[in-house]
Length: 196
Image (tube, rainbow, N blue to C red; front, side, top):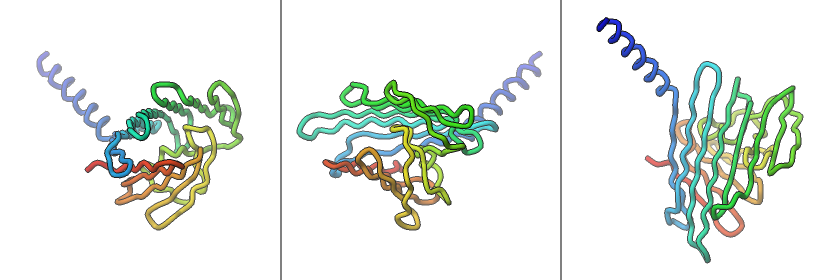
C-alpha cells in the first residue's frame, strides 16, 4: 500500500512538472516619461491540443488627473489559429470596451460592446501571439481589443509595428521574445520593458 502511494505521488509530481514546463510567463514594467506607472504580465500555456494566452495590464498614471487603465485578454489557439478570444479594457474603473471573438462554421463572430459582426477569414492569429513569437510571413494580425484586422509593418530586422485605435504599437524582439513594446498615443507614450 505504501509503495503504491509513493508511486501515485511520483506520477502526480511528474505530471505537474510536465504541465509547468509548458508554461511561459513574461512580466513587463510600464513607463511613461521614464516613470514606472504599472506592469503587464503575459502567460502562455501549451499542451497537445491548444495554446492559451493571457494578458493582464494595469497602469496608473498621474498627468493632469489620475488615470488608471486595466486591460485583460484571454485567447485559445488550435493549430496556430484563433478559436476563441476575449478582451476587456477599463478606464478609471469603468468598462471602456468588451470584445468576444469565436471561430465557428468557417468564420469569426465578433461581439464588441453588444454589437455583433462577422469576419470571413478561415484562420487568424491574434496580436497577443506575438509576445512569444516573431511574425514571419504574416502580413496581418487580429486585434483582440478592437475586433479588427491590423496590417503588420516590418520596421527593422528585429522589430515590427501596427497601428490601431489611434495608436502605434512598436514591438522589438531579442532572442526570440518580445523585449520592448512601445505604444504611442496622441498625448503620451507607454513603454513596456521586459523585466530581467
